[in-house]
Image (cartoon, rainbow, N blue to C red; front, side, top):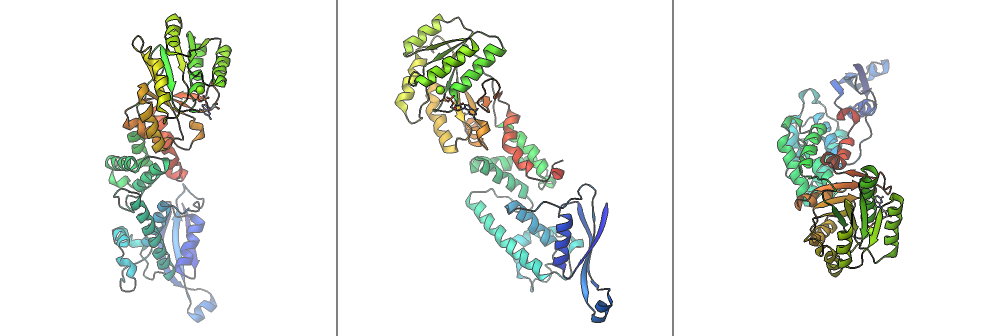
Length: 420
Ligand SMILES: Nc1nc2c(ncn2[C@@H]2O[C@H](COP(=O)(O)OP(=O)(O)O)[C@@H](O)[C@H]2O)c(=O)[nH]1
Ligand SMILES: [Mg+2]
């Protein structure tokens, strides 16, 4: 424990000095703050006074706190802290004491921190902060924020805000915040680590996962450029190179020569057969003749709006589905927005896909909309892809990995010491 005494001409000045030197975390304990006579001869002669704050710094954090940014979260913390250090007893002098937010905070005022002579600068700051917070709260309300107490439950609000910023719908974000609230003890409402722990588990409950390669015939569908061909090759490499299974590639993407050639090159490298089927009948015959343990079918990419094209592609699978089970994965790029994801989930349903692959997670900040939609449609994830290297840039879907990818950033925003 390190003890300190700081002095300044005004209460605000000395408080600012303490904050800038030691930060404002829970490790900074203030034992007393009072007005004292200036000890110098000149001070005695002129009966000057100054402010003095005595306190202690707990061992765990001797470094000054990081400069706070302008988020709602930080504003609330700052506001609460300032209110804790300022008296609002004289309501006639301080109309702000009747403001709703202050009423909300009043019961939390710590007696030992109540100054008998509050500084005007502090009051002004409180007013300004309160106005800003009220504005931000209005903004949150407009966005449909849940009915949570602004200060006491600020970490739950912050969780809600984070989920919205990741791309979840407001309804999903609210449901997650409220379910987390129900699972956390009220004494932990201000502890992000505790809230994160529960939120992570609750979010993971919304994520279903499954395997790939459960059927002999596997196909990937999805929009152009989603990563279908690359991911199919990744699957082929895993089955043939790693698991030593006999694999054959078939492409019904006969519209783009380059796409067909791309697949043939990969097949040559892996030393596996590759065929191009231009008609549904050809696909049927190719499957009948194949001796492979796994047949991986590459499809043409298509805009979800092009229903005719999608129906043409589906005709290939209609030709074989009576004799064969088909494992169909919908490939969706991680950066797909909620409205676009809705369209993909809906339009590609004609392929009766049973699994979702999130591709290109390395190119996106978040894939929350895909996770929300998969939950709504009750579809499990099979794989995530994270790069162009066909030998290694993929991973099996895992509910905790998915939950962490969406919530860990929120936990990481706070001080590493608070996180422990
Ligand atoms: N960064 C990144 N790029 C990828 C990933 N998967 C595929 N790609 C790239 O995305 C582009 C389109 O991939 P492709 O497999 O041809 O998409 P398709 O049209 O759906 O078959 C190619 O340049 C791929 O190398 C991935 O997981 N991460
Ligand atoms: Mg392709």
